[in-house]
Length: 383
Image (cartoon, one colour):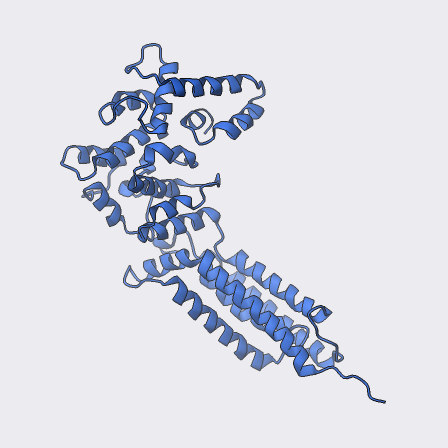
C-alpha cells in the first residue's frame, strides 16, 4: 500500500514565509510610520545635526539588516518547525533597542531601557532556543498548513515578540506626537503638524510650544489654539528660557520667523517685549503670542487692555479673542473696553444655560465638554 507522506520541505517553507511576512510588515510599519521622526531626532542629536535620517531609506536598510541577522541565526540554530519564529528573537530585540529612544536624549540619556532588561531577555531567548531544539528533534512529522497548530504556535511567538518590541521601544504617545509635529515643522508642513494628536487630550508643555509655532506660521493662533489641550503657562510658549525645547526642528527657523534670535536666556514675555521695540518682520505673530500668553495665564484684564493695540474690536476678531472679550464683559462691572457681538452673546448665553441645567459638578463638566470643549470659555473654567 502507498501511504501519503507530508512534504517536509514544503511545509517548513510555509512557516518560514509566513513568519518572514509578519516580521517585514511589522518592522516596516514600526520604522516608517511610528518611529521615523523619533529616529530622525535621534540621529540629528547624536550627530550634532551633521546627518539627516531618511524615513524610507532608513526603514529599508534596518529591515534588510535585521532579516539578514535572522537568516544567520536560522542557519546556526536550525529551527524549521514549530518554534521557527524564535529565530527572529535577536532581530526583534535589536529593533526594540534601536527604537527605545529616551525623551531626554538631548541631556545625554540616549535610551529609555536598562541594560539588565536586555540581558534578561537575551538569556531567556537562549534557554528557549535550547529546549526548542530538543523538542524539534524528537517531534513527529506533522502536516504544516496555514491552519495547523505549528503555524499558530509560530504566529503566537511572533505576537509575543512584537509586544516586547512595543514594551522596550518608546511608545509614549505625547512624545510620538511631538516628534511627528517637529518632523512636519522641519519639512514646512505646518497644517500637517497641526493634525497630529488633535483629537487627543494628552499633551505637555513642549507640544504646546510646537503647536503654537505651527499655528503662528499659519496665522491661526487666535482662531484655533484652545481647540488643543493646554499644558503649561505663558513661560512655556517659546523656547527662549530653556523650559521647552525643539529636538529635531531647528530653533533658528522659529527665531527667523519671529524676527530676531535672543542674545541670552530670557522669559518669553521679555523676548516678545524686546521684539515690539524694534522693526520686527512679523508683528502679527508677536501680537498673537502676547495675547495668547495672557489667555493661557487667564489674565483677562491684561488681555482686554492689550488686544485693542493689535486688532479692531469687532466681529472679525479671531474666535478665541471674541470668546475671551465676551467672557470679560460678563465678568467685570467696569470693563476697560466695550465689546458686544450679538452672535457671540447668544452663544455665551447658551453656554451659561447649559451649565445651569446640571447640579452635579462632574456631570456638568461632562455635558459642557461635549458641547464647548475647544472654546476659551471651557478652558477658562475647567482646565
